[in-house]
View 1 (cartoon, rainbow, N blue to C red):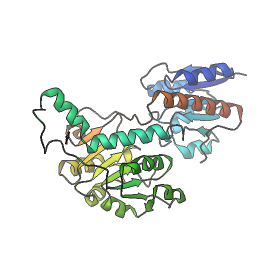
View 2 (view 1 turned 180 degrees about the horizontal axis):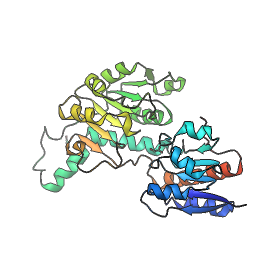
View 3 (view 1 turned 45 degrees about the vertical axis):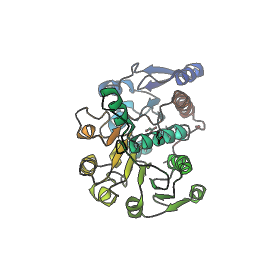
View 4 (view 1 turned 30 degrees about the horizontal axis):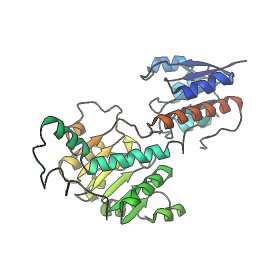
Length: 323
Ligand code: GLV
Ligand code: GLV
């Protein structure tokens, strides 16, 4: 009998096409660019064999219970999986597909763009040009920080962290430090030095967060962390907002404890427009667009559709999350 699939948002056509051509499932779609309301999600998954979701959908016990025993596969259009209750999913024997690798380059590029934009104060400069603040060329105006000769610290030298390191090194980085659970043999390619987190935080001119959100990394960047950073250091986060204690970051930025911060991820998302961080000139906030290139999002949609189909049919997934 035909299997039932629920998709929680409009996704790129590439993915929809694969699902319709496969002819193995009946798709019901939350046909909107806005998040599915919780009640509609709970209704939508009822009796579903497959669920295709986004990082903004909380997939918890309630959702799994609402889906019921038919559920074979959850395919998330993301590399992160902190939005899903993995223990509960495992208990139920549900397979999970995700989208690593295909978004690595796009996310690393965005991280470099955000780092340079933050350190060289591009958003401030753009505003000054528009509002008449640009009166003349001034030797001391809008100065920032450069990568050449600097020490860069990458927290979490995984797929994306490594891609960031590869891209930053050619800017003349002097030392590339990284921290995490284990040293990585592949770090040699970027001359990465494995150091304790404290060393990375205190010695880096640029601290780049690129780790997964886990119980160990939740709130990792807190008051103590920022107090160890240089007053001239730049803080960049393109992983998950919850790795950062935002009140502590606000204090560090407004007191001059650190120089500036660039965030592609926040808590919550979206960040309310009256949030204190948005009042700071030395904080650049982007709306979680790390993987947002046309081609990457298309490929993510294809991959998540193929993961979903494999889960429905009990075959090998192109990218199955082993947990
Ligand atoms: C983006 O944050 C992702 O997890 O894919
Ligand atoms: C800058 O434009 C310079 O000429 O130094």
